Figure 1 (cartoon, rainbow, N blue to C red):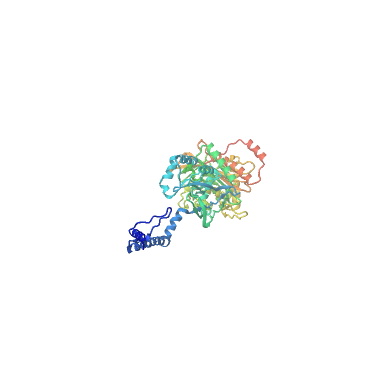
Figure 2 (cartoon, rainbow, N blue to C red; figure 1 turned 90 degrees about the vertical axis):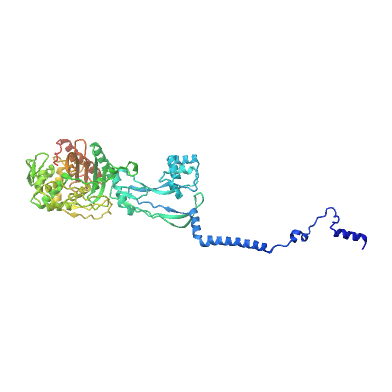
Length: 610
C-alpha cells in the first residue's frame, strides 16, 4: 500500500471527512444515532398498549351504559326535547232549535303559546307582542317569567281572534306558536240564555241544556305525535294518529223566533212597569213541546264579565210562588166533576165576604148571586170557597196532585223544582179554603202552564218536552177530568178573558182566547206584604181547538198597578197572536168585527179578588 493510501485511511479512521463535491446531498446514518442506539425499557410499550386498551374499555363501557343499561332513560330524554304528543280537541255538539237554527255552536280559535326554552325576544319585541295580544307588558312579563313558565309551555292567550294571531305571527318570534281550541258561541244571546245555559272556558256545561246534556254534547279528544325542531316547528308526524270524536247535536223543541218574541214582549212589560223580573212559558198542546221559555232580566253567555248571580236563575222553572186566582178554575172543575154543580148553578156571594173558623175571606167588591161560570169570570173568592168547602180535602189534594203540583216536572232541565203541597190530612178548614183560590201552596210558572194543558187537551195532563219530538209521534196524556168538564171550564176561561171578565186585555187579534188572571201578595217572612205583588195570566188559544198554552208572570210591578189583567194579560195577548201566526194556525175570529167590538167596549176590566 502506498503512503498516500495509508494517510487517507488514517484520516478516515480519525473521523476526518473527505471533501464532498459541490451540490451533493448530505446523508445521515440513523443506525449510528446515539438516541436510537440507546436501549428502550420494556414497560414503556406495555404502558402505551394498556392505555389504549383502557380507552377502548371506557368507550365500550359508556356504549353499554347508553345503549343497553340506560337506553330507555336517554331515549325518553331525547323524545322529551323533540317528540311531542299534541292533543286534537273535539268539537262540542251543537244545540239547535226545532227548525235547525243554531242556539249554541263551537268555533275553532287560535290559542297563542310560547315554548320558554326557545323563546327569544328583546324589550321592543315583547312590547309589540303584548300589544298584538291586547295585554299590558306587565301581564305578559308575569306569564312569561312566572312560575307557570317552568313547565316549558306557557299559554299567553286562549281563544284569540284571527287578527290577533296574524299580528303575532308577523313578529316572527322564535318559540311562539298557536294551537287550535274550540270556543263556544251562543247566537241568540240573552233571549235564549236561560234555556241553553253556558259552559266554562274549557267547554264543560255549567247551566241549562249545556249542563243537562253534557254527556251527549261533549266529544272525546284525539291526539297525534310529532317531531319538532329546536325552534318548535313541527317537522313530521310519527306513529298512529287518534282522530277526535266530536260531540252529538241536541235539537230542542224551542222555536227561536217564538222565544225571541216572547222575551222581547216580556222585557218591555218589565221595563214599563218597573218590575223586578218576569217569565213566559209557551207550550204546544198538539205535541206537548216547549216552544218558548223566557225570563227577563237575562244575561249574555258570551259576556262573562257582565254575568250576575241573580240573573243566571231560570225563574220559570226554579222559582216557586203562590199561584193565586189561577187555581180557581181547578176548584170549579172539581165541583163540576163531583156534582151536583153545573156551570149555571147559582151561588150567593153576598155580602162579599165569608168567615171560615174565625178568618175573614173577602171579594174585591160584593157581587150578589153568581153562577159557577160567573164565579170564574169575576174571580170571586167567596164563590170559590163555598164550592171548596163542600168537597173532601182528600179530593182537592188528589186533583192538585194529578195536575202535577208538589212534584218535580219530568223535563230535561236542571233545577226544576217540586213546589209545595202539604198532605191533605194536615189541612185546617181555613187552609182548604185559601188553597181553593191559590194561597197555602206553591208552584213554578212552568208547573202552572203544564197544569192548564188539562183544559186545553180535553181533560188530559200532557207530558211536556224541551227536546224536539219526532214528527207524528203520539202524545199520550194522563186523564185528570172528563172531556165535558174540561170544555165547560174552557168556556169559563173565555168569559174571564172577555168583556165583563178580569182580563179583556188578553184578547188576541184574530183568535179566541181563554184564561185566568192571578194577583198574589208576596209573603215576607210570615206576613203578606200590602205593597208587593206578583201578577199572572195563564191561558190558551184558540178556545174551540186549543193549540198553545201561554203562562206569564211579572214579579213586583212598581208603578202602583199590579193586577194580572193589567200587567200580564197584554203580554199574553201579544205572544198568542205572534205564536199562532208563526205556527200557521188560521184565525178563528173576524178581525174587522173584533176591532169594531173592541172600539165600542169602554167598560173597564172586572176588579179581581185576591
